Length: 300
Image (cartoon, rainbow, N blue to C red):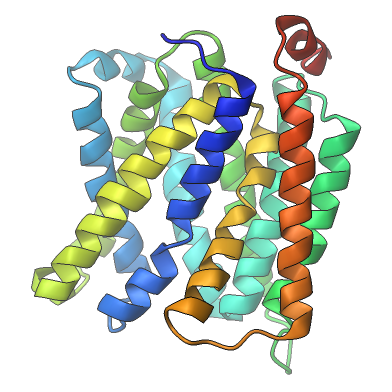
């Protein structure tokens, strides 16, 4: 397995986040009639097929002997399910805020407890700044009763993200090929979500639906998670979770530029804080590229 630097890992994860950020605009433009659950299912199924193809063989099948792969696949499916359940129950703003805000904290704390990866002070600072920025970007939640079920689903999605990211980093750090790990886990997740694809309706067979499914599956999932996997080789799960705060930043930029949506001054301030958090974390990680620095970073 080719060794990559921590700086390259950061760039790869940010590249993945940029691709993730295109999913909302793609769905809005091409398949506005499709349900979120069915889009997530088809995206995962096509993406898993793409990842399997990238393994160039059947080596990933040997990973199914590991219980962790099955747990990782369940985490992948659970993340998709609970995130869209949260959005359905509490609205896009609250569901996105709860899930994406909680994800880096869950990933970092689980990595600390499970993989003995102690987050450094810069991670705490950058994550806090990024989450505040996300809150400003998303804006005030709609008035009315708080949807407790939606918030709980968002937290469950964040915990699921933490599980599959920590398992992935653990397996790749001990020598497993990242693309094979992701292909095996995503195949499990795709099977679990298959019922949502089968009952998704006819949007997938329309011209715009087919194009959207290919983009979301092969680019936003296969290509993005290939980049994500490069980051898993050298970064811990908490760092990856915080770097993924770039996703809502990109989604907002595209919504303004392509969909002509408006953004307030408070939202712009939120964008600035997220960008500051990403710069702080990226600079911190780039200074930890020597083997001795990385060894210090994972000392229990």
